[in-house]
Length: 337
Image (tube, rainbow, N blue to C red; front, side):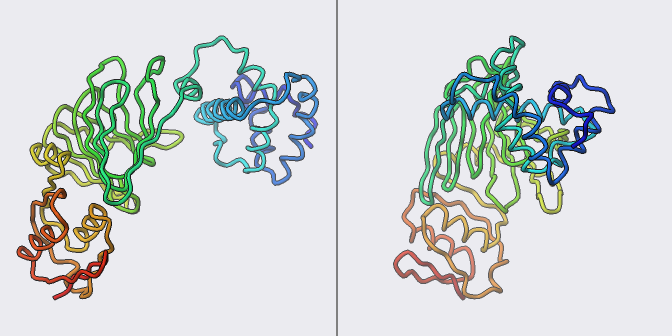
């Protein structure tokens, strides 16, 4: 063990008050494979000082969330990123850094938004294939969820610096205006930030991330633990599509009337491939769709569909537009020539 490192040095590192030399030594320590044993020795005495008894699950989780937020803030201003530390060292710190827990519980400084969120009750709403839901947020914003979507948000935005939600899937957002409290949608490493507007997001896993604006203005950005990169500022009738595996950004146009119609179950697809449309059919009707002839997968069509219509009516409308036929067996559909 490095004899120049003690508990107080690690504490100063987390607070950002240590010297550059101390920061370098601590960072190297935390990257070692045996860091958990070293830290256990350093922190063992602190357990004796923290004698309030075992914490309940909610309190322990709040401590962990606060600790992670604190270390991440430290990591943004350090040459030694938090992500490079060994996982064992990280979780030992979470479990054993009682000096940080004690400081957190007695700290009178203004908490960060992340620390406030740690104490806020969260709610999650999800849809399955074939389901849609309308979600009313505590700030009077309304979210129209499409099938296979998930939304997580605070039950109360009071006391928070911003209105932040986590989202995957497809949804139309009607955000209640509040210039003093921006509204941010987080989907993986992308975020969409607004003050008050309406827009549609497609954020299904393994598919391009798309934002289309019906009213107002939004900013789409790519985030990392150390930075945020603005990809585009969008206004009414504008859209962006981001493909993560190639890191490419495409600027598109959007018809606001089509976007607002979507929340009522009407979808307009322009130049969509049959393969992509098959995924939409599966998602909206909760069926399995197979394309028997691969050569028609890339066939492109433009069509308007009401997902409130019965399945076969939609299939007949697609058949009349594209050069293919279909068969239905139970809840399995095969598209073919």
